[in-house]
Image (cartoon, rainbow, N blue to C red; front, side):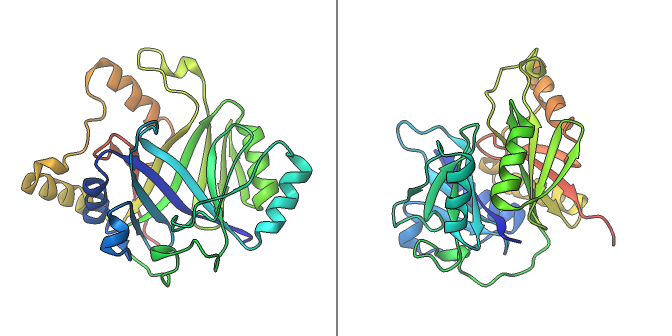
Length: 268
């Protein structure tokens, strides 16, 4: 594939605790030095890297952006200049472990752009790939014009595309970018969220084993209890909206309330 969907980033007031949560529960690993982790923490599953960044004034917390690795950044520049000349691609600061460049899609969703071997790549992004039982499967965005976004990512990054009703799935062969329609009416009875990145997806070897690990971790350390999802009338509406995606077997959140769809690996 020309492009790989192999980077996600969270912004957190508790970035150290968030990294422990994901390492303990999903077995994500780090190749970062202690010096680097004083400013951000990069962990991964052998294919996707997750960067957890402290929240500074003016930045919103939560699932902040994703990243795309391509074979040739210049090809992306040429395609964007031809079909979407209003979109800017900028150089990113040299201390970012993945983000050589920054750009955005027609809906304004920001994402990082990189290529293997560029100077900014470091840590888990340059570490040889490895296999593990618990892995990322997808990430999702809610969009006003899902077809328009799907066409953009297909044309610029050559991702495989599939359609399920008004939902689009773009894949690099391993990770899927799901584009879900955003309708204000979907949030009736709950707090209204703007069109934006929605949730992360994981696959685990056994849902029973995963739940047991979660129970053991939170019993030993209550500070690792995820934010409750589905409590109260508004929470029930939001949980039902999440479940309608049918992208997981278990719907939960992390310590900050970032939504997670967890599915069990099907037998071969």
